Amino acid sequence: MNDNNEKKTEQELPENNNSAAVSEAGAVKNTKRKKSWKREVWEWVYTLAIAIAVAFSIKIFVFDIVRVDGSSMYPTLENNDRLIVTKLGYTPHQGDIVILDSTYKKREAYFEKVAKEQGKDSLNFVDKFFAERNGMPSELQTKYYVKRVIALPGQTVDLVDGYVYVDGAKLDEPYYDGKTTSIDASVQYPVTVEDNCVFVMGDNRNHSKDSRSSDLGQVPYGALLGKSQLRVWPLNKMGVTK
Image (cartoon, rainbow, N blue to C red; front, side, top):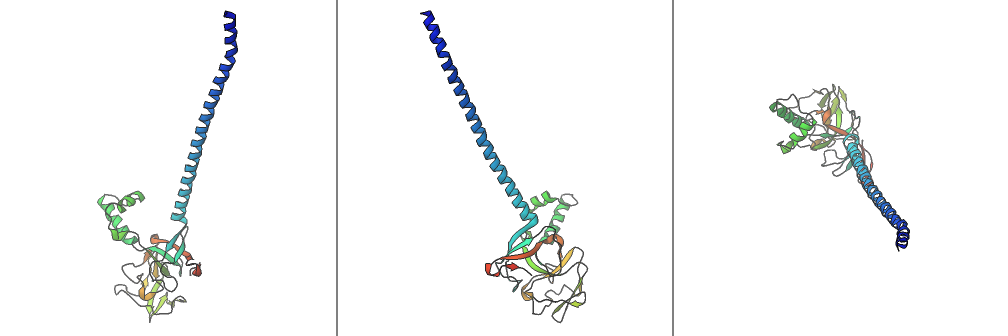
């Protein structure tokens, strides 16, 4: 009897070992599957985060799409036109159509005031971010205009008999056939463009708030979003902007 029991036990041992091995292998496989699933999810999240960061960087530094609001550039541009604006490495040139931040100077003056109140020489990017969201007047929020560069730093602008003169020469303006007159008595002509600024006007001179107004005045380089390169909407007017 003892011999039989011992033999039976010996015969059953391999089966028990196999079951344990199969169970262990299954556990390892399940663990690998869980790790594989987590790794796949992480890779998707990582890839998506990189894509968003790249898209965000392109929008901030390379190019953007903006919508024309108003008629100040008519007939060159019309209300609701969509434009591709290039930013990276942009340097203003006479005749460029540019997108500018019309509240830039007033907002910078506000930041200087806040800096003095905080005992600082100036505000950094982070300081400005929080200043914009904590008590900054709503009228200082960014508001973009689309205008044309008429003159560059150091050049002199004059208005004579309804025409624009830059450095004493009558400006060739094939995009406009009307008269250009002063719109603000406080802006005296001729006027010399300051360093790192441009003098801008809208093509629809009688319906444009531009550098002829002391409210906007000459536009600092820092206020320029970039240059309009292409109109992409409406489709029947798609083409280079000039």
